[in-house]
Length: 481
Image 1 (tube, rainbow, N blue to C red):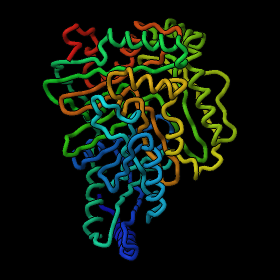
Image 2: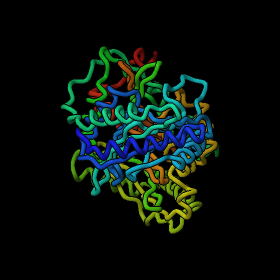
Image 3: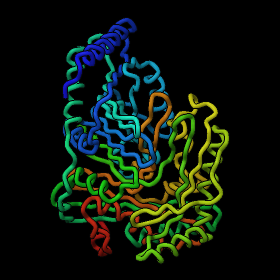
Image 4: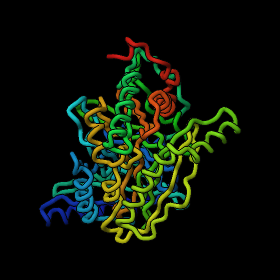
C-alpha cells in the first residue's frame, strides 16, 4: 500500500515532536499517529501479525463494538496479585494522558488478566496481568470505517526515520493479508488428561454441595481442564477459521505471544461480556443457568421454557444479576436490568441472560479498567458470596485457571472499552492444548448432570481444534498422568 506523502510527513513530524519533548523532559514520551485506510481482512491480518511479531491480538466483537487486530509492542503494562487491575489502570492512565496523538484516534491497550492470583500449584504460562500498547493497530468501527494507528514510546535517541519506516512497513504487510483458508484436518491426539478426572470432578461438585449445606456460601463455580497432546503442532489459524465459521454470534478473541519460554495463544469464542463502556454508559451481562439445545424445534422450545421456569436455575441466575446491579449502582445512575431474563441460544447450549445498563456518574473516574476490577469475578464465574467461594476454590480446585473465565479485551485512551469473560476458551502451545469449562453449583445441583454440562461447554473449543471426538469417556489409565 502506498500512503500519500503527507501521511509520512505528518507522521514524521508527530514522532519528531515527541522525540524533542522526550529530550526536554529527560524521559520517554508515548506517541500515536492515525490515518483512515480501506477495510482489511482482520483474521488474515492477525495471522500475519503472529508470524511477523511477538505479540498479536485479534478481537471480533459480536456486541456492536470495534473489531481490531494489533501487532507488536510499543509498551507493556503488567500487574500482579490482587492489585493487578489497579496497577495496569494507573500505568495506562498516566501513559494515555501523556501521549502525543495525530489523526485523532490514539492508542488502545489490549490483553488480559488471570482469573486470580496464582496458587502454589502448576502455574499458568500466562502472566497474572498483561496489557500491550501495540506497535500497529487496525480498528474497524461498524458504520464508520477502518483506521490504522501506529504507536511508539520514544526517547531522546529514537531514530524517527527508521521508526516510521518500520511501523508503516509492518502496517503494509498486515493490510495486504488475505483471508484465512479453509481449515485442514486437526492433528492426531496421542494422549489426553482431565484435571480433575471425571470422578474427581463429580467428587468436587459433591464437596461443594456439602459446603453450601454447611452455610459456607450460596454458590460456587467449579471448573475442569482437558489437556490434549498431539503428534503434530496445532494450527492456530485453523482454529480461528473454524470458530469464525461455527460461532459468528460470539465474540472471537486470540491473544498470541512469543518469548524466551516459547510461543502460545489463548483464544476463544465467548458469548459473555464482563463489561462494555461506550458513550458514557456501562453495560454488563448476567449469564448463568444453562440447558442443552434440543434435537428438534419443539424440544428446543421445551428446554428454553425449563430454563425460564426452573427454580434452581433462576436462583443461580438471580444471584449473578443482583451482584451486577449492586456493583453498577455504586458508580452509575439509572441502572436498568429489565424485568425478566431472556434465553440466549448458542450453537450447542442455551443460557439465561440479563443485560444490565447504567449511566456512569463520572466516566473519567470509573473507566472500563476500573469497572473490570470492580466486577471480576462475578458470581457467574466465582461464586457468592465471593470471598468464601474463592477461598474454597483455592483450597479445592486442583489446577490454576490462568486466563480462563477472566477478563480479556481492550481499553481506549478515553476510558471506553470491552472486556469479555474468557469462557469457551483454550490455551495452545505447540503440540499441547488446554481446554476449560465450568459450571455453577447451588443447592439442587447433581454431580453427574454438572459433569455433562461441562462436556457440552468443552465442545466449541474441541471442535475449533479439529478434535470433536476428544470428549469420549476417558479410560481410568488415560485419565491420570
